[in-house]
Length: 250
Image (cartoon, rainbow, N blue to C red; front, side, top):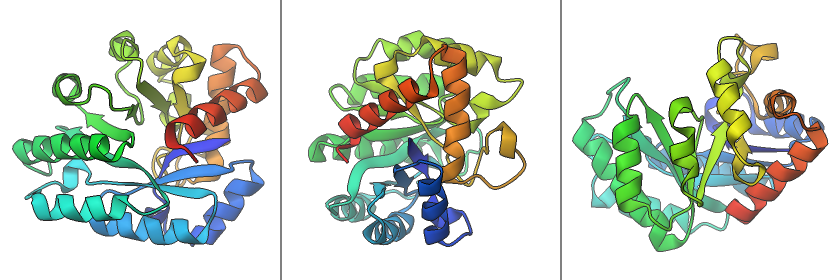
């Protein structure tokens, strides 16, 4: 099993404990994701210690105030590390609005361009900004592999699937009793376009709800997806591992 999106540096637990627990649960590869240049640097330090850990370096939209060429240069330098396999997370967040929208959009466009320049996929965060997020991806991301992290655009899943180089990743909230719309969306995603994640320490799946999430718990989300899609866990696991390997090159 894989975890296509986690934040090992934010979990408040020694990374070795998280990695060991993940391996014991059968999670053999994970992508830990930077939300600032400093967080991306910390993620790379963790990845240097553990063969199973890879990194996305990026600037989260909530952290994009004052985004400039200097920060972009920092991300470019970090992205050349051998364990960096993606750019992000980047995108737009109009729910919290912790950064000016113009700065969010500037950072988003710049990171898409960086992903294109370096030949890496870009990991997308979007919250209450669907129209602008999709419009910017349409305008700037043609030919760049896109990961729609913690997918929440249930009513627009077909629009997203129309792009053959976009992948859709489901997090622990797909297991919540009231998330029937997400589960229905998950049924419509082809095997070859599907990913699964924890977004740890956030969004623990239903069996662990109320606790900090961790990469080991991705297996619970995957079990729900397998059940909803009417396939065995083993078949889904093989597809997810194949998808992540092809996308991230790990």
